[in-house]
Length: 235
Image (cartoon, rainbow, N blue to C red; front, top):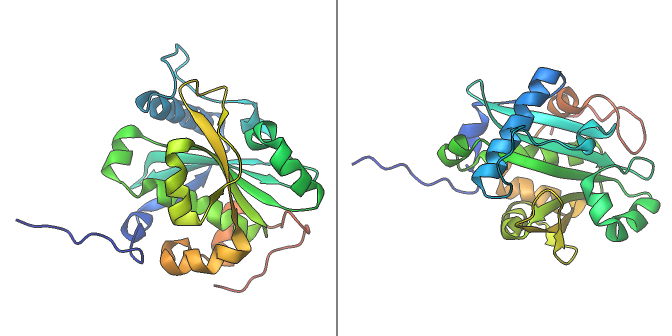
């Protein structure tokens, strides 16, 4: 009987990443596909009740500091994530609304955050590809690098906290709090010092590595902090 060798940390997600394409969501049609994907994912996990709209979206999807990415595997939409780049003058996201007492003082000091939210996977594809969440959240890691972020943050379900701690060295920065969209679950704010752990995470999980060309293709040509073009050196 044939058996596959379990992936090690150094190979985890590599095979799936090779079949993956990240697409910035820009059209109304693509947004609608992501909103419907969120609905299927949340309904499958018991976070929400059925609704006639069969879509999940909120006002922060339209924020000027938001980017929504669709994750395609073998050309098929399988996952999505929304990223907000937070600076002292661009603070719109759920995390600052619910955890402003933690985040606003740090933004006042000039820190830059990348907030990953609305992480979802198609229920069937998520079960077929267990590493889909890791490959999807790679976008947040690359965004931290591109935008010279001090900290990666995520407002996550309490039962998902171990995943963020394991892969991204996130630590819990708040007590559990309610989230209006998820009546059955509480969330915690998790943070990770990107500069302190960047090399450690990339050493353990090499799929997190990238170069300036890939990051620029995904996120554009300017840093959040300085407005300058990012460095061109490959990494």
